[in-house]
Amino acid sequence: MHKTGLFDMLQNHIISNLRDYVTGVETGLDSNGRKNRGGHQMENLVESYLRKAGITYSKEITTKEIQSLWNMNLSLETAENKRWDFAVRTNRNIYVIETNFYTS
Image 1 (cartoon, rainbow, N blue to C red):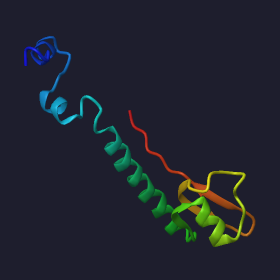
Image 2 (image 1 turned 180 degrees about the vertical axis):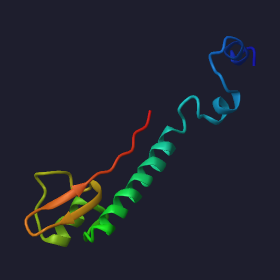
Image 3 (image 1 turned 45 degrees about the horizontal axis):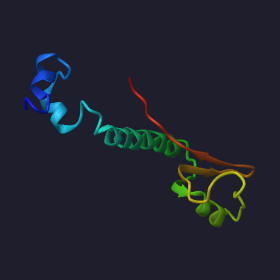
């Protein structure tokens, strides 16, 4: 622990919580997991609003699937393998929805 500098980091308060540091929370190793959990929570929230409004939608759909489902060519707009959180089709438009959740 002396050779790795861990004692020095603790003594000089460079890391504040040894348990969090060891599990990767303090060093940011869990940031992708937090992003995914927050993103799924926001997807669920948006989905609940779509349901309450009675809007028909497709969830987690790729551009290629949208093209196939609604017989449209979207190749100029976005990559075929792009996955959207939601897609809503109206008589005039297709709306693709990407949800995010940020906190500070």
